[in-house]
Image (cartoon, rainbow over all chains, first blue to last red):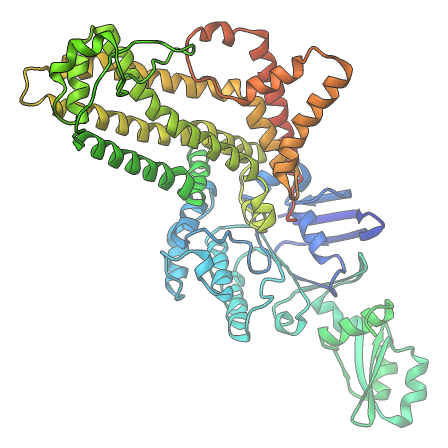
Length: 287
Length: 314
């Protein structure tokens, strides 16, 4: 299978505001990509571009198609869940299944019913009668019953309590771990999805500021807890981020020689959350 | 085909109240009124049978109690019983042509009442159908399904101008059959024949075919109206009614500045109102007027499809 997503020089502006500023990235089959950025960074704009929901400048190929021209056929192989609340409120649960079965050639109704049976969502209720968590579960059940190549999730667990958030990602992981489906998840709740991801894309002010495989993070970034005696030596290696921790400083280094860091203390791979904060601060973002 | 049918079903799920419940309610109310009217025995009434035709081909209701008229005396001896009995007796006393005209008034009245409601329901549906899902963000769900923008917009149009009128037609037909049945019941126990007095002159099948033909003709005749409403619905972010009215009013105003002929105004007014009679229909169908309506309407529907393709949540 060839590259799932290939974006080249994508730009999109709303008036004077550059939502996307010449971004390029690629997504390979089977990867689970975290698209991470603060509010207004361009996450949703990027995802909407992938879905053919907005016009933009630049080149984009999703599953070999240009979503601006071929959204309709593209949606046979691509599923999308936005944050809670995009299922129409008047829709009955059973009708949601009828509809998907009617219009989607790859929808497996029996599978959707099995997944729903494991939840406590009643078939005869309308979406407006369900809790936020149930609506998300319903949408996920529909999506998991469709055999797709690409799944796009835009803040799928926003506004849900911790129980639903956990079960959402557990279902997702269990269902997709053995498939060749690629997944893009946008979120700013980084910690919850860190263990799922194979790739990271950080986006800020319409630009990609980090594009890396999780496995490559270790070779590029190191975090060391530096004692006060070594602070001067550590600063010379130009850490991209430093924070006080129990009388020491936790510093994150980018592209520093492993031998240089080892002298300062135990080197670990920074957590995605810390790396995110480091990158955002360097980009003049969050203070 | 299965997918297209589903797009129409989906509209019926969403608009169950106005597409199904409302006509059912109106039919139920009208039927109750009929039933009461049929059973009601007026204390004393003078009937006059008239076959005066008004200008648009409808005869004036002839069961109005009237002060004095030559025919009144002719049938006076029959005036005993319920409204329905009186009606049937009157029908019996007239020639078959008058009977047919007389029954036509009742049948058309039923059609008219439901058609007016249908017209308002259609206007409201088309004006909102491409806007509400952008407002409540459910467009993100609909657009995540492999349904083309053409199919989405065209099936909404189909639902509004073909599918829903058929549902209303079922209500009309049921009510017409009920009315004629009630009249027939009144002939029971008399020497009057239900078939000859009621069913044969009613020409129910002709009425129905006429109605169904008009549904199809109005799909085309009013295409500029349907297309304009879809276009406003696809374009407007709010105040869609102001857009819908403002556009044509602005056009008419501009026309009045440059010419006093009023062609545009006449054209707009014509295509805003469905044709209600199939008399001389072929002349209208083959006119430049109709042809221009098709082109303008199709262009607006096409534009609505284009806008739908670029539509995002509001």
